[in-house]
Image 1 (cartoon, rainbow, N blue to C red):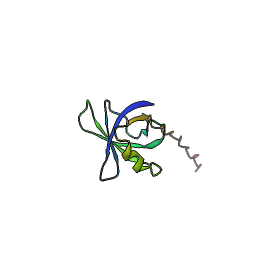
Image 2 (image 1 turned 180 degrees about the horizontal axis):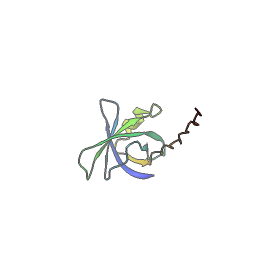
Image 3 (image 1 turned 60 degrees about the horizontal axis):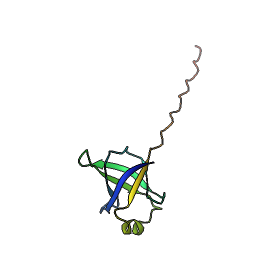
Image 4 (image 1 turned 120 degrees about the horizontal axis):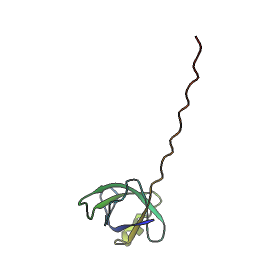
Amino acid sequence: MKFLGNSLHIANSGKLIARSSQTPTSGGIVFDSNNNKIGKVSYVFGPTKQPYISIRLFKSANQDEIKRHYGEKLFVSKPKSKKHKKRRMKPRQKK
């Protein structure tokens, strides 16, 4: 896990806004300092040196507890890569 940044506030849309020192990959899973899953990185915006990150919270994340811990350190893991299935070719039919 890599250090993502610090949480700032919860927006009107219900997403958690954080400030980071580097640009994370979209879709990465976000953890708090207690190793609890909070949400996924949904959008990165703002200046390139210190971007803002919009985090879509999971339903299991307690918003009241997150509000009490504004400024808390957040961490991100790499998103799982999707495995591509090989397509099977249909056997040729004889004429």
